[in-house]
View (tube, helix red, strand yellow):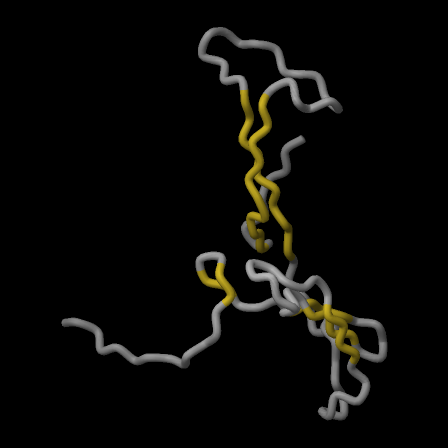
Length: 121
């Protein structure tokens, strides 16, 4: 099954999986098409994202956090520590979103601020 990727939807590649032919027990192997036929398939697992409208986002009407609930999700990540890798925020009406650490090249990073660099002329 193939789905057309909508350019208005955000996607993030979660993992790339190597599947040698014959290891999938739930589907028959495709027929051989000749000597140029490769015996493996490279598959991408993609996470599909859609924009959260204002009606879907958690709200804090009193701007004091009193009606908000925070739930830590998975911990650890690259290092054997107790850093939450995701925090779920829910409001009094049950709306929620998940916050994750900022990463760069697959590593968790901390912002050191912004730099202004004059453009070369």
